[in-house]
Amino acid sequence: MAKLKTAFFCQNCGAQYAKWQGQCNSCKQWNTIVEEVIQKEETPSWKTTAPEVKKAPKPLRVADIDTAQEVRLKTGDNELDRVLGGGLVPGSLTLLGGEPGIGKSTLLLQISLHLPYRTLYVSGEESQKQIKMRAERITSKADNCYILTETKTQNIFRQIEAVAPDVVIIDSIQTLHSDYIESSAGSISQIRETTAELIKFAKESNVPVILIGHITKDGNIAGPKILEHMVDTVLQFEGDRNHVYRILRALKNRFGSTAELGIYEMLGSGLREVANPSEILISHKEEELSGTAIACTLEGMRPLLVEIQALVSSAVYGTPQRSTTGYNAKRLNMILAVLEKRAGFRLGAKDVFLNITGGINVDDPAIDLAVVAAILSSNEDIPVDKGCCFAGEIGLSGEVRPVNRVEQRILEAEKLGFSTIFVSKYNKISLKNNLIDIKLVARIEDVAGQLFG
Image 1 (cartoon, helix red, strand yellow):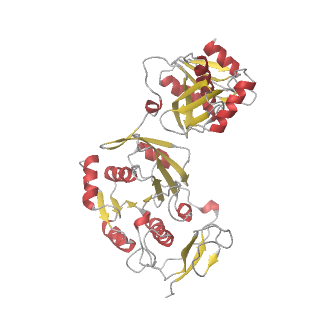
Image 2 (cartoon, rainbow, N blue to C red):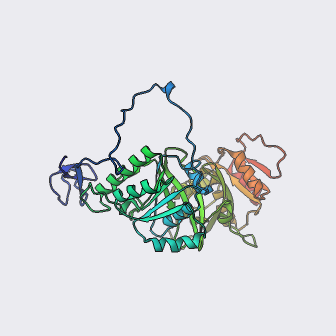
Image 3 (tube, rainbow, N blue to C red):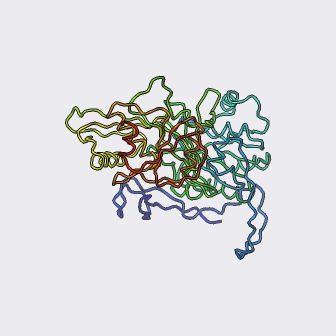
């Protein structure tokens, strides 16, 4: 049996040291040196009994590999299934990160209670009574969910053999520890070792495992960066704790797209799936106000209609202010320069504030046309017709550029009751017999002329 050996490594540059020191001699960074295990005792299989001797895998030709697709496990949560790419893949490892108190444990407990499969929910942070109190708020019926409060991986695997679950949920990976590593729970060595044991279990037993991961003050998942490389899927659960809406997005997904988005509403009885996100992204008002425009954007395969709010006023402090919420500030400056240079609008001496409602960040350039409409509406103090929406990218010469999947955007706007949509004339549109009026525009001046005369 090999003796446990450790060394000290810089987390920034990887330099190795025999003992700890405050500053790395190679990269000159402070407090980046941590202890790592370089040789440890032989760890047995995740099974408590002696593992069977398996034949070494043989290489196969590409033509000989079975391409039959694995049947995914549906979670019953449409938003989570969409973000995962259709459900949980057997034998996969999924990591869910998010701010403290954002609702990670509530989301996974709610899923485990509603899953039609036998689920083992392992918590190292709460007692079984605390979890039961939260479970009673979510649902009154949960026949397939087992709760275990344990932090030692060897004991967890022993209970897994007894229960034989179809899905395992760990809350959280930072609380687990293994007997084969001498460091405390939450250390880099423990996180790496316990994750490796769970990966070995998932691949050998074909049981999907979901982990909850804490995040640092910088918003990164706590622990070594290799943790995100080891798992198959990394999900981010985000939102403002002062608001009721939460957004689930994939940062890494080996089995699907990373562009999908899931939206939830936090209620006293748990998280509610928001099937129509436009209900939270468009404010309901009785009178028409200037400075607002509706943009049709896409998040993955899902079309969203979001409200853009703009406020243009005379600069009071001499230097004009440019402030954005949920939109790229550099892109706003570019659009303002295009309006000044190409369209003749004098906005250089005015403050411009831009906000995307609902608390989401949008990177889709197709909302540029709605940003222009909102800015001009506020500048002229003329409201945009509430039946109008926009989908177009603005170029540096003032032209309205075509956007991808424009027909899907048009159909979504029509479904939500909009009467007019402005798109680029260079988009190829084959839709016929539509209830919505499609306005084809080539330049910013065309949009301004049709909206404000």
